[in-house]
Length: 316
Ligand code: CUA
Image 1 (spheres, rainbow, N blue to C red):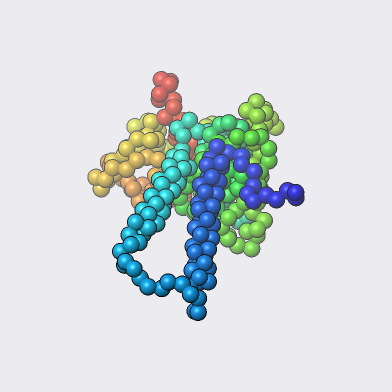
Image 2: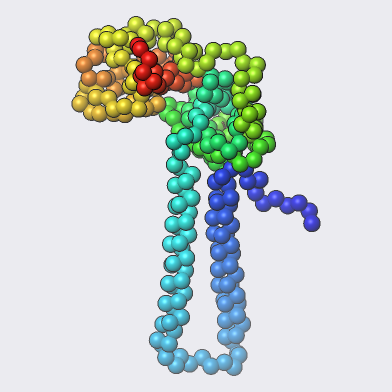
């Protein structure tokens, strides 16, 4: 028999579950389609004009049991499908806390990747097998969509905000990475590959041929170079200190309380006046068009690491 593949290889923890939902749903639909057609054809032939069959209705209520059966059973099946698919959907959407974070920037027409240690790559994503990976993604221009069929994961990548995706690869190998949102002339060439490696190989790959500075110290350099340091260190009256700010709630000038997450920090870099922290003047200039998305990631990583410092008790 020729090797006919309906779907690509299943290479992540979620893939078999998503396939099973799809196959069961398709199977049920096909079954009921043919069941209804069979009854239709049978009755059309049996009761066609001129056949000698009994056409008198004996008791109009005789079919109640039958009608209840064909109403209740499919209803239960539909509700069961709904709950089952919802459980899978929650697993797909809920990112594990211990996931390793990789940053992805979509751009006409390439994928730029940044690893936790600051290592960067283009159109290739190297990940370890058996480890949950969280992608934080944004776009420098238009809407793209990050799609790895073998993992059964896909998520839009939007300019101006972060979206997340997670997967846990179950097999080593090389898998297709596609852009699944029409994004201009070379959309069809906006492809790449995900290379799943043994954890030791991944560590070796991560460390190899890599002379750039680690993300946090690259962040520190950028923080100094862009002048952030002049207002955001110590107890300057001009800007809030950023130590230990990530993941905390911040009170704004308007009295509103917001969570200092990735989106908030990004917005504060690009549009500082949008959400001013209470007690500080609107002094900060915008960095719109002056800073690349990947550098914003680097700064966010640095701000996160300031939080880690605090927790491990090192002095300021
Ligand atoms: Cu990017 Cu299509």
